[in-house]
Length: 153
Image 1 (tube, rainbow, N blue to C red):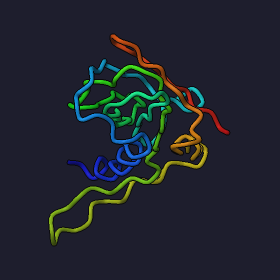
Image 2: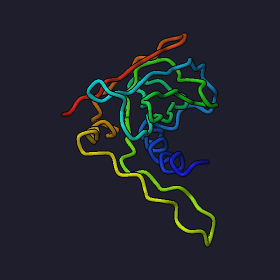
Image 3: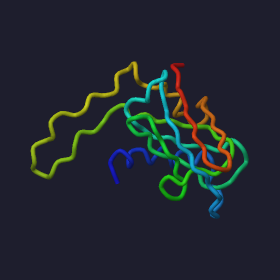
């Protein structure tokens, strides 16, 4: 598992905790993919997306990695399978600091750590707040393509 994914797991667990544990039975999920942009441009720095049900639905919640080009694909039970249908609050976490490359023990450090995401390209923290994120998403039965354009607050 990559270090980036390992660092993002707490956000998925926080969203699951906030939504409740849900049912132990697998619910039907539908493919969900899209693109996250900030002021019309792909979100810089990659990150994570997770959903919190806003209705009284039970079941596992979906999440996924936001790639460097801003694209995402939701996962509930297996990679890319999607999400259960319903209405959700959307949480977006942006990676603003990137790790340098791993090296073998005793080897010289890799050349330079990538610079942090510039302040002008950082999304507002409100988008990662489980109770106050203004983002919502409606997932319907069948394939879903949902793009989200974030704005400065």
